[in-house]
Length: 172
Image (cartoon, rainbow, N blue to C red; front, side, top):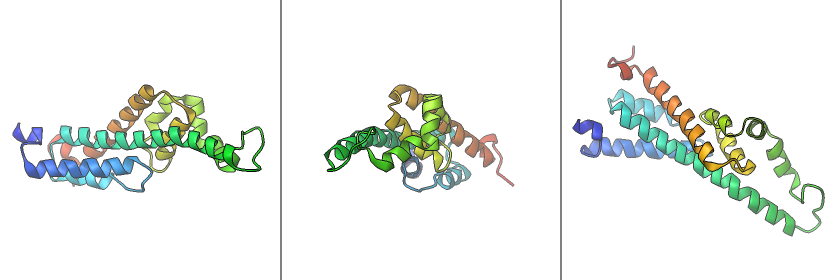
C-alpha cells in the first residue's frame, strides 16, 4: 500500500513528477511525446493507478493551456488587427491567418460536434489543434474539460494495458 500512495517513496515520487511534467508538455503545442515516458514508467512497475492519474492530469492541464491560449489569442488577434492601418472587410480586419484557423479541419470539427469532439484531443498533431480551436470557438470550459479528460484517460489506460503490466505480466 505504501508504494501505491507514491508520496512515501522518494524515487516513485520523482518518477511521477517526471511523468507529470512530460505529459503536461505533451498536452501543449510543444512537440513532445509522453507515450515513451508513461510506457517506461509502467514497465519499471510504477503503480498503475497513480501512473494513469498523474499522466492524465498533466496532459489535461496541457490541453487547458492550449484552450486558454486559443481563448485569449483570438481576442488579442482581433484587437491587434483593428489597430492595424489599412485593414478592412467583413472579417473585422482579422486577416488571412485567422480565416485559416476558422476554416481548418479542427475548427470545423469543433463547430460541428462541440465539446464532444474533445474526446479526440489525444490524437497526435490534430489533438493540440482541436484544443486551441475549442478555445477560439468559445466552447464552454467544463464540457471541454470533461471530454478532454475522458479522451486522455482512455489513451493512457490503453497505453498501460499495451505494456502488459496492467495484468501482472511483462510483455513479450
